[in-house]
Image (cartoon, rainbow, N blue to C red):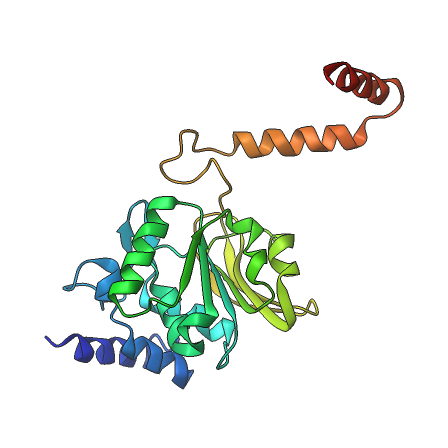
Length: 248
């Protein structure tokens, strides 16, 4: 069947009962336009409302993508940062909404960055910038951003991302650990909460798929050492400074 027809059917299903997760006409038009099969690699099931596993990550189900963009509410010509670009599908939707040169995306996994660049190019979105970065650090070289979409769960948005919001900007992320809800935070601190979601946790360097050490030990050790260093007083702190001076 013609992919355009499949896309139209997909969007109709998202707008109609029982799902009714898509109300924004611009988002609906974008989802009718982006060739999802270029990103998930399976034309037979590309337009079904289901996730796809790709290189250890999840290509989000269309209903989840719709909910993300309904919460994000991007406007024409907004600058958008997507953290956790995955296969690139959400970046393509953003490109349709705000213009591809206004979309910047990062992912911590180098193979995914390569795949996202390839997928976006083949789907006609060469202007989207995709870089390999620790998502918690954002992309300060191109900040500020009018909209930031974090496609990974966190207890709170990383400070660096919040600091990269433009005045009047909006950051959307899955808030929580095992039990999560979609949340939008504005640059003035205002919060809006949406329905329950389920996302993988935000990863930092060393935790990504394919890393030699894929766990949180390195990060937790650094955080623990930093807390200890800040809490030291008196002779203990002087001893550390003395050891440091010997090393010089």
